[in-house]
Length: 309
Image 1 (tube, rainbow, N blue to C red):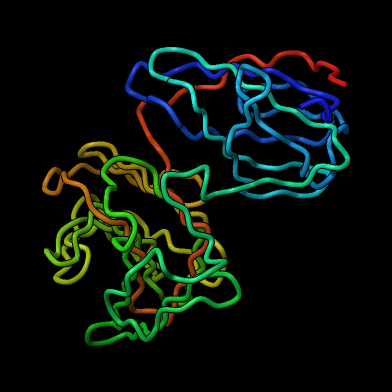
Image 2 (tube, rainbow, N blue to C red):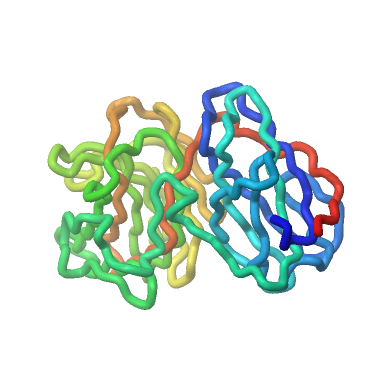
């Protein structure tokens, strides 16, 4: 890392539960100056404005860690997810953040960072079209699930991950979702299509209230849990998240917790699935699965900036 002029150390405290190795941690880099705290670090106007020179390195100061750049505003801030290789079960890990190399370009890779990842920049080879397959396709770098109708079967469309990934049990599933008016975008988990089992969380864009949880996930749906005001946001991009651990499920909209529910009927492994019905279409992008324990590992101290030339 001799081409990088600056670095800061950072300690991540482990979880008392089995966080294990290769846990994904969020770090938010601010371009300007300020006091480092928690997941936020300031680069003192010394990084590239596009954050393409930011790198994360193990405690040996030479082994690169995989990372994904989720979003950025040039010259303002950038949100990264970093895969921590060391064991975070009841122990801390030190990583280094390097910056200050005008020749470096981004090496962001969701594929290398997460348990499962698809930004739909290629094809649908990771997936199986399970229902309404004529209305499942990629357009302009995101997934389109079309064909929703407001009567009958509601045009239910399902894309499942079992082609390459059917081992989801516990974890966090996140995605960017853009639903049309009155659409019901859904994400299924622990699903087995041939057996019609599993769960799904829904971001219903209609007015009114209902539980945001259903089972089984493919047909014969049955809602469970406490009703809440529907959380879908039509005709805009919405960040959606499900946290699954044992029989406890949590659903989020734009990082705000909306519902926590428990159910123990389906405890095995299965696929994740992306679904739409009722409203005409739902778009999905940046679908990823990461590890999850409760409590999660937490951010601890940042070291002072070190010149490194």
